[in-house]
Image (cartoon, rainbow, N blue to C red; front, side, top):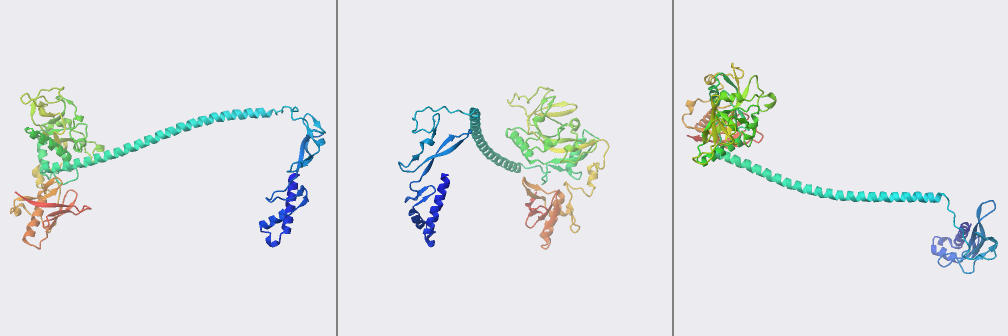
Length: 524
């Protein structure tokens, strides 16, 4: 009722003040406030006046007493009123009821009158207990979560430290890898420079391949054929490859130089070697060692790398090529075998009886130094054994078969028969010769003694006879008649080249970069 009375008095006061305020000033709070301060009337809740601060002056409040009533209920009963000033309280004592004393007293009981202990409802202790249990559980859960969070924070910190450590290691590895890459490039450059100084075999041609085919139209082919036929009369070569591995050749040359620097004759021999079950590519494609002690088996003279003078001996150790293992060589045909014709640095050798316990050559009592190799005889062939890498170079890989000649694999029976073919030349590839510029005969080129060469990565390399003839003919024609062309096109195993005898340049006309090389005529 108090709230309603206050609301009614407030509305009446505001309306009265607004009515008293001119309409043009009713949006002016100060003007309205001045009229509110002038009000003085009896309202529902008592006298209505306002203080300068805008509060109601001497507000009146009802006093209520909460008591039980007949019928078992309880209600609030109005027992008087009071204001904000001292002495403004009016109470009807007869209407007040005191606990455990009663109603209708003339005076209020003493402050020390007995007050009964409050009776808690049965559900309150239960709820409090449940809340306590929940609080305890929540506390333990919080502690566990806090511990786990602390452990997780510690683990995350440790993980961050490990990640940083790994990053630092990765950076160090990158730096090391860069150093290694630089070292490898430097090594490759030095190997190429050393190979250029040492030179490569005169039979080598400019080719990116490690295995370079040698055909029956090449002199080399028949040299190898005649050597293998010495001890295997009914053998036929189906494929012959020259191994052009510059890294291996440089390593082999290094060992040759080492022997010579120690006043030891290299005693280089061409010998046979079969790799048995080991694919020959493990040897010829290797960039470090070639023939390796790691693959050597225990033999009659201990664990070493064995080479034979006779092909008939190495034939028993020949490799049987398998189609799935010859990706860089054509698939083999029936009954074909493979073995190497190799260069071997025998050095200072010693002949010994068979001794399977031998691990290294014995010491020469005259010099106090070890012999370089061991030799002996077995199965009708002299054999040599070396006990270190780098002492042999796989010069040729020979694929052969024994029995009747298969013309599809071995088209010529002899060098003489091959020489009658229009394809005969001392090179391993054919040339495209324009009909208007036929290949000159040797008698036409007797005016100058020498040969044409081009500059490769490993040094000056001579052209084959057919290319030499074309270039020399072009040079002679151009020298005699200025209107004659100075350029001739020749064909190599993979590319075609323009050779210009005026600028002394060779240009690859099929390569995307049109690479050029210098050429020269080397007089003899």
